[in-house]
Image: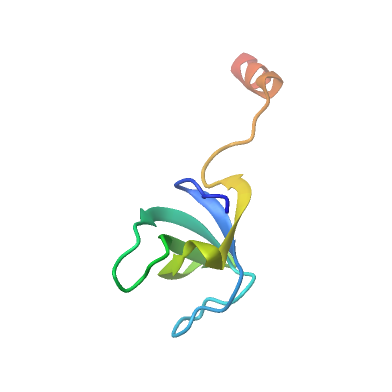
Length: 88
């Protein structure tokens, strides 16, 4: 199981009970949660977005999400892009 980093985008693998969050929604990892007596699996606190708006902030087990390659707020620039922008 791959662990997502802070601010990494994830995809929900199932609907979240008592929430508007559904399978296929995307969220950003805000925190890593340790296992507890009641929840044996580690988890994440996520901010879930839909149409550019916050849908909900939830906590789910790690197995409920699949990490995506994107990091929230990180610009995907190549060294050439940076050099061109610095010259302009």
